Image (cartoon, rainbow, N blue to C red; front, side):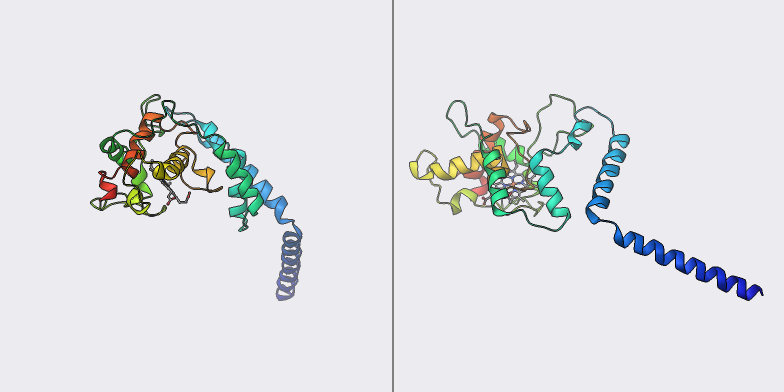
Length: 223
Ligand code: HEC
């Protein structure tokens, strides 16, 4: 008798499991993903607080970041047209140097490229940020430690034929590099590189030092 009861209970449980699984299978994936996004946002909102240079508002993605991360999380590519739209929008934000001068000091550029300080909860507001370029790029041949998320920038200027910063021939490379540093999404809709100028991470003067690091023939990058 006992055996029969447990058999009966097991069949009921089995049926319930099948019903539950088919109910899950019927759920629309978009609906589930939306809920998950909402819950995740809520957990993040409740778990974090403003602390010095870090603001909870950073969790609010702008429209193009949202489009990129939604597409990436679903394993789909943005259409060529959408990418172009995002790139054009971002390119519009690029501000050329106010005094028309694109260059500073490559030695200070190297210091900035090494400097990973800034925008964390232990950084005071108003303190200048570093560029932390080495986190993602190789730059000088002498530096042993660097990240590889971005392409190597070793001999960046040399490989592009920049021998004279004042020459007209170098102008397109100079303007492209400035715009890339100002807003990396101008040329790659879903770029993983920070938008240094557009997001106020680096000042014009700091970007000029980095321009020299990348393009000045005397810089360690171009040896
Ligand atoms: C979080 C990673 C990351 C950081 C930090 C970063 N970059 Fe990048 N960068 C990338 C990636 C990825 C690419 C290539 C994809 C793209 O175009 O966005 C790239 C591309 C570039 C390019 C264009 C290269 C080419 O051949 O056209 C330049 C120039 C550049 N980065 C300079 C810098 C400088 C200077 C810094 C520091 C101020 C920096 N990057 C910081 C990730 C990063």
